[in-house]
Length: 509
Image (tube, rainbow, N blue to C red; front, side):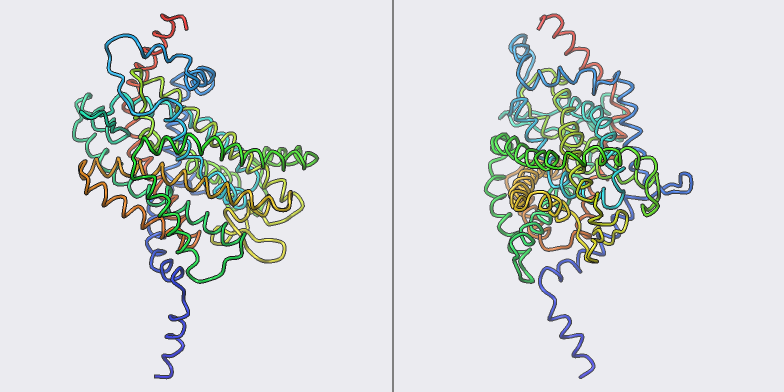
């Protein structure tokens, strides 16, 4: 019996957070390996999902005549309401639940989350400064994918007799393929997407957010205890539950207030840090460009490894090609589907080209004097000069604190807002997918919301490594059914674009 006592003591010493993590990790490992299956390219493995994602984005960019650049000014005018008069004529139905700006802020709140803070830190620590360059490239190309999926989301949405809108890839896959005489293929893709989207809402849109928010709160305020993460998760679950009960209209009202404020707060603080380190900016930008093509030897996989890290983290951050944001955009009040497609293409620009780039620049500036070692990463945590390891949002926090003592507390507040807004937006995405699978009843809604809130708590309890593996794979798994669908249905998006542009020209607006 004496020989068993160490095992018993060891088991008893494990806190609640650690026991939850141990139970979850095996599934996270398996799911990550499955989704990120690779093909060999010049001796390096590249995940199939990234090849599909980027080839689709590049194709849409070329096919639509670089719409991401050409119609960028028009997209801004649509959000500002310049073309709202077009919605007031004719007999066509333009039902919806939110306006263009609310749809954009809801969708942006789903993408502009801790991926912009924690995932950028992961990308740079693993792939070096050069990963930033490829994140920007992925963001620019992703604008075209986002246009296609958001346009199709509005075109094929479903509106019930009470004016409630149901949309997203589930509907444009099933209805679009039915129009093309491929009903069963569309139905299969729609069901696969809905199942994966429910999983993504629980993982990347929920568990990852509370995980990093809890990590930052615990670190900054020195909270101790084996169950501290769990209790922070419970607090988040209560706050989230209060909002998501009200549906898309309440979510939109919350996000239209939170998103501009949190973006201004975070970007403002980061720009101050960049300004205070203006003497290092040119060197940092130089590293970002040169190491995109000629990374240091410590970076795993060399050039291909750096590019893969940049694309992978950008895909998680802006979700272009995943189709999730089309669910929020489908609820817009418009009769011109392409108008919302143009609004949607702004998302990857805001999310990746602006916010992710600023975060990366702060981290690269922080590491110019060798604060940590690029490429030396274990369980998503970089090696610091003192031999300790830190990763995710805590690495970004160190970069803020080193530049402006005390600024990491501003980051804590920003992180909490980023996490909260992302969680409530993804609750809507997951719920819409759940409704598609199980019906539109009160009790089916309640079942999903309870499951969602359980994952809010779970995310705060488990480690970054476990939640990142699960979340990364869940978000990017959406690419498979969605991009396949977009490659069949993109001509429909072009029809809608021509219709909208012709109406603008006719109105001389």
